[in-house]
Image (cartoon, rainbow, N blue to C red; front, side):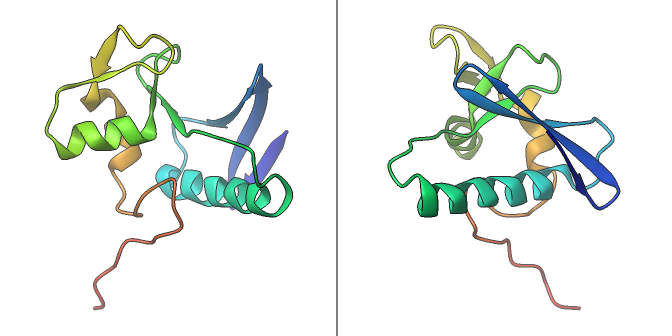
Length: 121
């Protein structure tokens, strides 16, 4: 499926038990759009599938085969760790810095509806 968000298009692909949100590299406000889509999935889960367990995984922009859970990347960033465990292979680690594009915008947590406070000018 493809969804239009403003001038950008977002693709969805079902692979095994995962829904992949596909954003092109030049998308405007990528983290904000991910947050919006995750919020929509969370709302659907709460109303239609209350017992459905889910995890937000980030795909490395440097290597599409590398994923790490959002919560572990956040924890590693907060503790100034250089590496985080891969979601698919818990024995391997990848650089936390590889996931930096997901944190370039201050939109608040990607897996929560909390919005970052923006200073009033």
